[in-house]
Amino acid sequence: MKIYFGSLILLIFLPLQIFSQQNLSADELFAKARTAAFENKDYPTSIALAKEALEKAPTYTDVSVFLGRVYTWNKDPESARAVFAGLSARAVQDEDYFIAYGSLEYWNDQYAKSIEILNQGLVYHPQSEALLLLKAKVYFADKQYAEAEEAIKKVLEINRKNTEAVNLAVRINELNSKNAIGITYNYSHFDKQFDHDWHIVGVSYKRVTPIGSVILRGNYASKFGQSGTQLELEAYPRLSPMFYLYVGGAYSGDVGIFPKYRTGASLNANLPHSFEAEIGYRQLYFADNIWLYTASVGKYYKNFWFNLRAYITPDNSNISQSYTATVRYYTKSAQDYFAFQIGSGISPEENRNNLLGTEIYKLKTFKIGAEYNFSVKSNLFSIGTMYYNQEYLPNTTGSQFDVNLGYTVKF
Image (cartoon, rainbow, N blue to C red; front, side, top):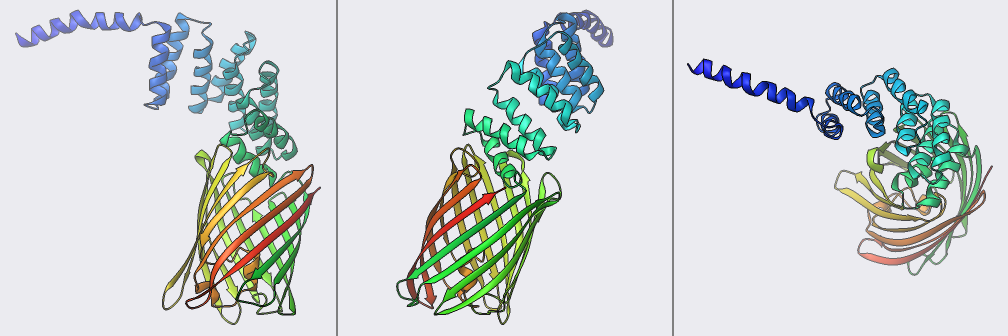
């Protein structure tokens, strides 16, 4: 009797449920399709629901664009293209349509087709941040850096607080000119530690190659009436759109003013959500080797860049640590920014520390400083200052004041 009653209930309510599903509106089916795609990642169900919605409302553009996107995510580019071709035949002008179609071709490495679609969209939406940003990404992926820079500049003119645009602008800036020649000058004054001021002059040449940029640099330093020179070579080979390396080395015959050898290597990652990270090592050789291990994490937020870097130097008795926090505020481009820095400990990345001896990295240091970088066409200028309260002997501190000047021309 119970089985009979249950079957009777099923026979009564099942048709009602089917009838209810069949009478969902296009909007309700669209909502279910979005839930299936975004929350459950169930693309086949989402596609079926979107198709059902289009049967009820064949000209529902938002559903068609969504269906094309889901086909794209489901790795079915031909079906996606068919949907977008139908929208093109209807002369649809919606911004989302051009973004979705352009993204499909971009993700499938059809860069020329993607640019064609995005340019069509920009005719109707010339101030679209999303279209211009995607256009910059496509050009960047296609290694057309000048065109990528032009597109990203337009994004920043519209909204200089666009986080993703600022991040991409910095990456483009490293590659958009084949050559760059630069000169830097560092001046250091000490209130107690030394009677004479220190000076470092560096001249560099940067060349962007198909696998990444290479920098050749020569340094000249003067202290205590003595002088010395150092030759450096650095490279930034790209492994993938996400990962690239830093590898570098230096040599000097003037040990004491510079380390005899310096090497370094890092793995860098451009991570999702405008994060970036680095892990690697630095090695200095005076009379003995000094090994330093470094890691950093950075984050772009609107037109700010935040970075925290650590250096760890182990030895037999203890572990020396250095931490530096940096904040940049970008103004009109990736080459124009204010920077603020605060930290503790000695960093081998600073030019001034090419002059340091073999044990000073173990002493305590507090530092704080600021920098301003600006560009005039292809000319880049920088000016910075840094204050150090430095333990130059155990339990004995003094102050140091640095001024840094730089000029670079790109061509």
